[in-house]
Image 1 (tube, rainbow, N blue to C red):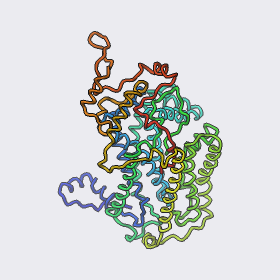
Image 2 (image 1 turned 180 degrees about the vertical axis):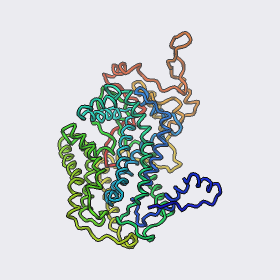
Image 3 (image 1 turned 30 degrees about the horizontal axis):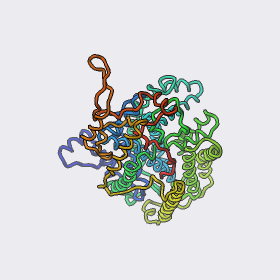
Image 4 (image 1 turned 180 degrees about the horizontal axis):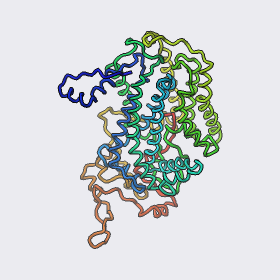
Length: 568
């Protein structure tokens, strides 16, 4: 659709380059002169948003890998060291962890848009299949990245998911042993996952190039589902689509930044702030929120092999969608029945995600089975039958005719209504939660805002440290904090001299010296806070069998209901 390049540089140096390597002409034809349907709405901006998020994930991931230690004894502490000791490490870590969720939010909107407007139909079958491959690679990359912090949910999630391959007849156990690098999840597993997690984003980038290439060959679909016929149907990609995509990216980045700066751990699991312990199984093992619909499908099937087949089948069936839906009309805008079933399918996916975060028991299991049936029925029964029996409405003769029509008003009103209804529902949830706490608002929502130049309450933080030193330190450690952190911005903000004085009051065991003996010395700013007990066994013996948790992560490890899809 883009055709040969019409780029003619005037600069002699650019002319010399263009004759030998027409890379600038390629970029010009792909992102400047590329003809774009003039009726595209903002759902078509998520391709650009996804490209941006992939770049963010690769850049932050490469920098984080410079400081990460892929060893079971050091991985957990190395992640916390990045947050506390690396310059802007907290920003890199939260950009990366929340960026994964933003990536999946954008890709789900991108996929649902393709389903609704028939972007998988001829001549875009290869384009759609490449998108499904990207999605599979994303899921593998995200799962391996979730294992790297080596918290409780990382370890047990890796154990559960890798064990699924044992359901494959004959070769399943061999595959599991290969993934583990042994006979249980351990250090070889972590090294394998770290290596693959570093590699796969570049593989994704390569498939994205093929995806964009296929897009430029077949051309973009549009809300009307009709192909451009004249020059009136299209506009140049730049400036029209470029400005619209840029505006959408800015809005999306504001949404992204809200999570990064205000609720950076909201989309994670608090159990992952507890170091992995093979001897203690979490009460409820769940993956990240973007895997929950497929996790619900997996658990709804009593047979292990059947559950694995259904879970992977729920993804693979997407690749066959161009041949399952034979309807001549692309866009569901002109297919009344298809539109109704599409929204039922969206609700099904959301409910499956909610059920994936619930215990696999009672009514939750029954509901998961019913919704799993409808999920597959949508692709294998509903779409093929609708292609035969549905009578679509008249489709515009051209994109120009579609632009002159008055579509979109009802959709805009519906979106506004959904936003308002969602606000009322969330408000009701928060009111109910507030009543449980006996206060007007939940404690976690009592924010004080002093604007961008606001300061932390330094006096309160210093009093909190005094309470820890006089009371809590006899049982609890803060071993992930160093004495120099007392002088950091955002903390108690002691002066460097005050932090050094605090460190000097502590006797730290060091050595061996030249004589081969251990010795005690005054603490230094680089030293971590000492543990009150020499080992875990001594701590348990002094506290009736319960080991006092480290307070460095106490706030992050607190649990509360923040499952799918409440965060939306």
